[in-house]
Image (cartoon, rainbow, N blue to C red; front, side, top):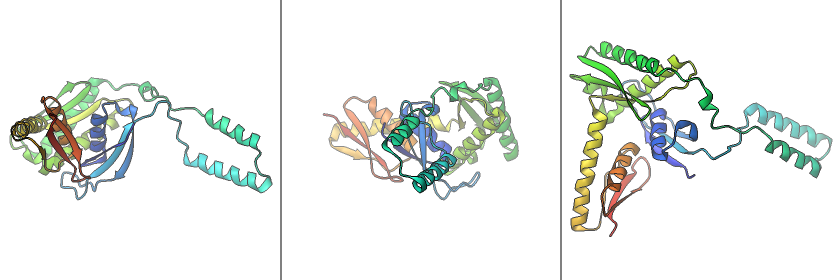
Length: 267
């Protein structure tokens, strides 16, 4: 499976976007951190996080720890100081390597799950604390969407919890996840997102409508349209919307952080 690279306000958000693109659960994916964000709680961030991800290969061999590597190096040095290894020894080492235990996809699933009601309670208590700290007229709630917990804050004057380019919202989501994981104490938890004032749905609806409008222009005038650079989450929404429009295809071009979507006719 090829690697995909995404960019977001923080590592956790970037991993979530990558999982959405890959269409798999977290335990079925592996990640590499390209760059980390400069995290400023409830404020703007100077840089964004970049993460590479791919679907975990089947029967992925267990990773060698640093201690194992050190022991291996010491063993090799000892062998060299005495006598060169024979071909039979090499084959024996290869057999031992092949017999190493492999990572089981089911390993992470064997954890005891945290009760859903306890996860939702942790989310509500934290979001209520945020509301009280900011002294705003708002209320919190939770709902489920395809095994994902959505924690929401709704009320008056809550725009400051979204922030420029949703930076504050992503920071709030990151902290909420950390809170739930601490309550879980190692138990398995559901995926979690946080929304403020229905921002996510409004943003999605706006991008879908924008895509439909651009598609009409392309059908009428022909050719293609290059959209402005945007984040991975927004690009995914546009790709999904374009896939529902007959005669229109979409692709991504450019390099992060200025990667953009290209819409064009298929005829």
